Image 1 (tube, rainbow, N blue to C red):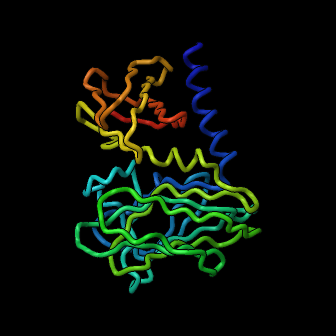
Image 2: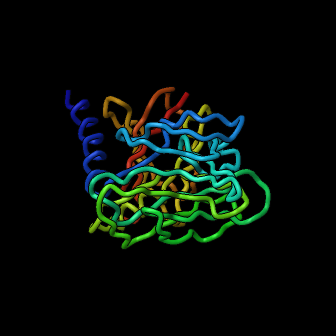
Length: 254
């Protein structure tokens, strides 16, 4: 029973942190787009939020091994007006952050632009590599249930994941920005190891729990490779700590 309470503590803690730090979040885990073609449509995302998309497809299975955790959405080209959008919720937008990745391997800059109620609040830094990039816009502070739009600003495909926005008048926590620097891939995995990617080249304390709350692995990584060969197939909770910043993620071993 104590183990079940421990697991509930972890899950409730994650929910509480997200509620404090964010007005809204989107992981794209509910996205059902295929990779066969680009299309227009909508889907119900995290916490029942409705997202609309124009000329989008899936993340191509993270074919570039950039560290995408689960599903994401790929925008096509600026000439196709490719974009995603949603309503902020009643408390508006204070600040927003998201992850960006290069779509496919063709050369050329990738960049997106953020709009709130049709007003531009800036563009991300252009990039042409296979690493994870964080685009953050602070001090937006627009009140009311407003329209959030993220548009492709180039002629090349760009992938978006893990969008988070705070309520108007609130800033996104620095710790929240730090936790977005952790990613685990492949996930789900059939291999005997996973790669844990961070933006800082420093040791990472890793603790793995099974779904009963039992600690099954603890180590300090000095590289980005975690050996999971002794773990059985199943779902696990991984706690990652670096420089007093801690985040918890789910790992699926098949």
